[in-house]
Amino acid sequence: MSVTIKDVENIAALARLEYSETEKEKFTHQFNKILEYIEKLSEIDTTNVEPLSHVIELRNVFREDKMKPSFSQEEILMNAPSKTEKFFKVPKVIGDI
Image (cartoon, rainbow, N blue to C red; front, side, top):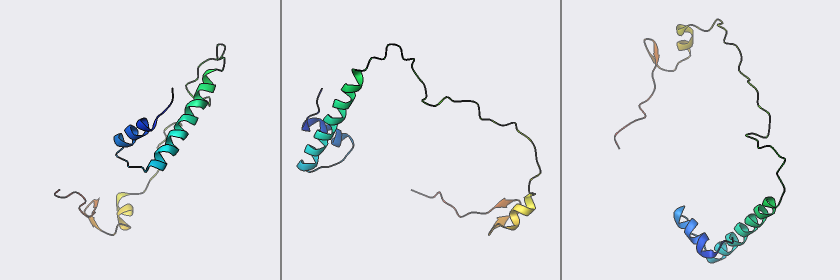
């Protein structure tokens, strides 16, 4: 399977991109090089290779939850540039569209 300039134009249209003729030719060549490489990979005998879900063996990295002392609400709000009673006060970020 090879990629044509028409394919590159279609991909560009789907992505809402515009390319010059030179760029289209360049991308056509690059896509074809990528496909050639993938074809080489398909020639490799993988009959005795088990499929992987990840290249690095994963293990559970969770730690046990432990309660420990934290700052009080008053201490946290002492550094707030603006506050209301028990909460941080921030500028409105959602408005009319």
